[in-house]
Image (cartoon, rainbow, N blue to C red; front, top):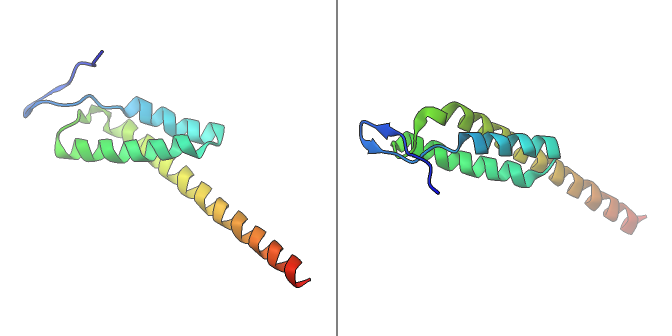
Length: 99
């Protein structure tokens, strides 16, 4: 089942997925799961690009941007924490080998 497309001066455009992207961004933060955040980041990036090109309904630009930013910030924050944890483990292993 397809959703009805919005009509623009250029013709028919793809309906936006802003609500889904926002929900994925929020789920990433609430559930602590970076998979949701990465999905929100990637989908948001793609949809914003499509909106800019005029192929997607721009009515959901605000909520798409919100979900995109939530997903990007949490994904990058999670990546920084992961790198710090890896460094701590490597330093701990190096200390055990030396000591």
